[in-house]
Length: 377
Image (cartoon, rainbow, N blue to C red; front, side, top):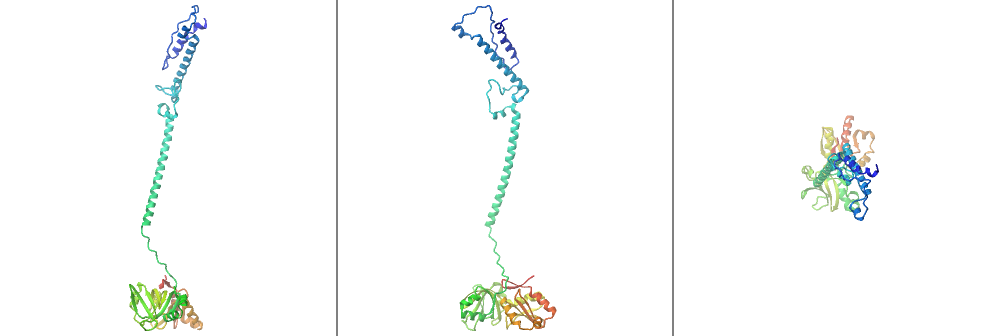
């Protein structure tokens, strides 16, 4: 049998192989070609009406190959779900357009890729939520700190505590000597006294009011318009000043500010020597104090015994030490006790060893704070 006789069987074989597929290729009926049949001469009309045999065979073979490929893709889709499942269009194959990767998650067949992408998306949202929580907390903290800073800045600042001056007076002088020095040469006197904390001893002239302040005067002479030392006292000294009478011995400690016929001193503390004596009596636990009417200092009364106490400037302390240095050492040890830190010295007629220890311990506890003698712990 010739090859031309076998050709009519190809369409039937292709049709049989496509019976189980979803789409069955159309079967083309071709009448058998007899070997003995007379051939019709080819004319232009016959060739245009029917394609030649070679073209027909090529068409049938191409369709058969396409059908075979489609069937193999259908069978693979059953075994491998990611290539497509039953009832869905194949992902690849003839006639299927290529699609983008993002469209895969829209199909049920790509559930593996969808799960992976869902995991990535879930982690992304978790990280984004954590970042949002941290950002919000930082913003809240910053707002709280900003609010606290704003409230702190809006609140009035606490008053600044005044600095404590822990030194004794720088200069000690009588009111007559101070006025004589300014009358002799005001510039030289300013170099010695102006701007310094001075301890001035004199006799009380009068107490006058200058607005809300009390001014203690110590005139050089008993004349209405005589030069004087005018001391503007602190408010805390009102009770001390009220107990004074004219011509009483008085001492004041304050800052000398100017001289204009009168020496002006501000921030004065009155009767500092009596205050120092009270500190010593408190440390001893006994004794009373009174102002010395002859010299600078106070009298510490211990029953029938008395001791002279002076707490002045370092210069005055050195002057006292130089004055008593000519005395025999035994006499100094039996009568005098001094403490350099507070510029205090005490003189007693007869010091017993026990009394000397008590006096030394008491004098060591005297401290100057803002020109006021106080008791140190």
